[in-house]
Length: 163
Image (tube, rainbow, N blue to C red):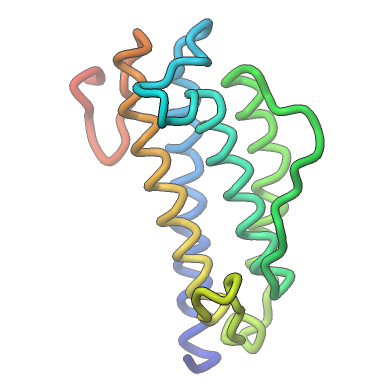
């Protein structure tokens, strides 16, 4: 990938992250209070664990890309217990991580990063990969909402619950 291509992909992906993050917060915020431990099966994460996985993985991915290396996600601290707390974490951390990506030089955006020996891609490609990871898990969480007694917000257009 050339530096010009990497700069374009980085900038385009950052624009997408901005709008997708707002949608993610709407989905997390649609979780029904008191139903945070809901999970559709024993093999699934609870709603609150999934919501925090989305928020924390988004921040971890972007910071790792900005660092030029993927390390183990930080496990410290108490996990949020409510949707509001997850959104507060997201609001406090995602913009800073996204700003770090926006500040990457074209050369750093084009530089390959190794993902735990499984794949190597330019940093700018990982920004898009991380966004797809987020959207994937957001889709999972949106499928929890109705069984939890909530309503699915508009994501890419009206849902059966929105007008």
